[in-house]
Length: 396
Image (cartoon, rainbow, N blue to C red; front, side, top):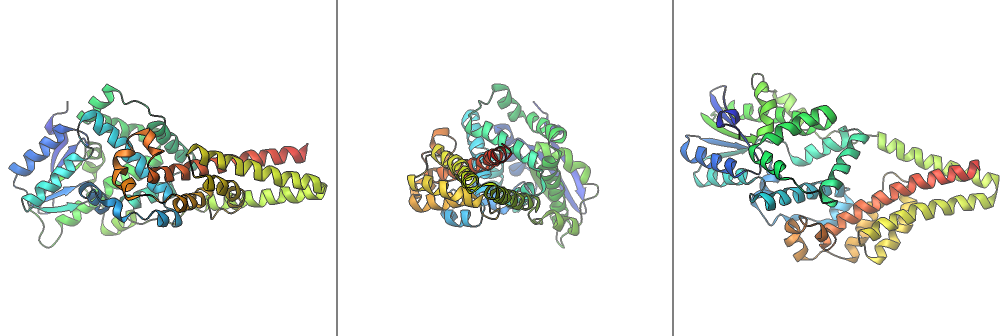
């Protein structure tokens, strides 16, 4: 177990003494340590590794009231929310095994700050900005690794070992994860860890350089962040750098170019087929429809979509695959949300249901995102298998 001096560091920023405390987000020991320092320490400010939306989700269990499923799909945010739900599911599984809700030390810090009339600050970057930067700045292959890990960790149901649980309680696993990211997925580490380290140091410096700064501030961050934050304390990022870290970069155009490239290629293959013979041209079109629509419909069926959604996926996929601005999953998700409108009870139990694999298929909200995922995956598989079959038929 780590000693307190290993996870508590005191640094000076201007006139403010900052006590950096590294916590394990699933540890009762961290909760106890937070309670002891806030109740017995003379702090006039408590800063937590949260952003406003995450603070709202942790402290307000009725967050579902603001979730508009139709707008989520219409604004193409289903993928980001699916990642959020997957992470929440993994945290819930940990909480059930360990007996401590993930982030409980942060929740307790917020409660004690309010109860003792201590100034509270959230210093982490907005979660939507972080996810947006992850999606737009990480390579395609690294995204595949993320998706693969998400499937293995959430849908396959990989068990969490006793040693992993003990390491999480002591905070050691957080350090090993940081090292692993650095070696295998450097771009993911940069967005998820390095940038946030810089951002949180910048936010602490902002608070410390206000006209009337706090004299003693307790800053609670995950133990893994101490590695990157401590060196940055000597030269915190300025406001310009902080603003740059907080920006959402424009979407990468590579995917758009690839999508239009596929569209042009397939249409060109159709033209070649009809040029050789009308029969071959018709056969190629049928191949495209059957493969693309069939795999998308199969994905929707696996997610237990409504019969109308399955039919819609069959006809939508061959068309959306030729238009990279519209995804099959978005269309199918909209149809499913219309045919099976989620009930209030689905939103109320969503947080608990996603921790149980079978409930992803029973809760109407969670199932919507399964339908989005599997129909999109099916359409992607159908696109490449149909393309391969079309080339084979032309060359044959």
